[in-house]
Length: 84
Image (cartoon, rainbow, N blue to C red; front, side, top):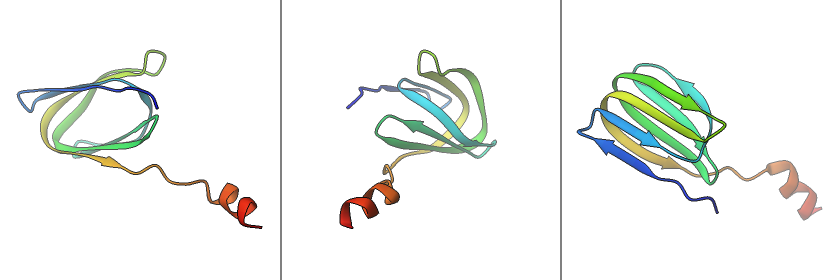
């Protein structure tokens, strides 16, 4: 399991480590993938200020109203192979 950290400053800036990719983003919602699943950030006027996939870091600014983890989905094709 990779370690990650999340730092929120005044509900206006969030710094995240262990970012593998950003799947979707707009002004109201950003979905980032971490090693152990997804991270959903909701708010208003969200902006990806910095993103480095080499270092796994991201900085997001805007009004942050919600932060939640999303479970990592199991690989169904691998599961089917095991069950056969």
